[in-house]
Length: 138
Image (cartoon, rainbow, N blue to C red; front, side, top):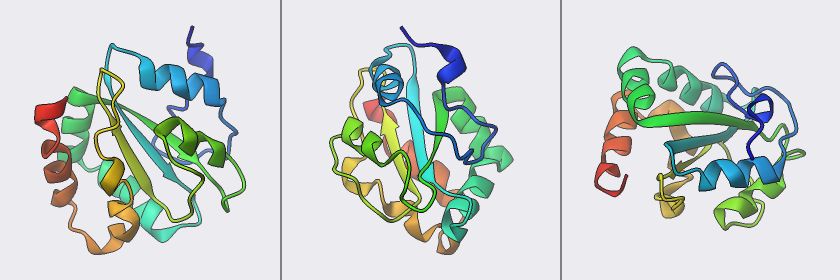
């Protein structure tokens, strides 16, 4: 059972909170929605740039219609690193990282989860195109 008070939906920011890996796994397995998990930290310029992109009106419209978005803070790679295992990866540095998870619980972009690590140099419009490139798998 997911306890919604524990969900990591945090006003489009990295909160510094330690997440419960079991809750994350339950969210991944939830068949009711597509999910977008964003790993980052407030000190990272690319993570902060990605947050800005996600708050853009055109991006937000697509996100709100297709995904529930969760923000997971890794601070200085000192918290929540074990959650990467929920996506089938060992703890990895380099943020932001984005994981698209379909209603079926499948991670759609495992090979490109690090694409947004250079967010500052990627046009805002590219995020919607990136999401749309997975639409046939949702």
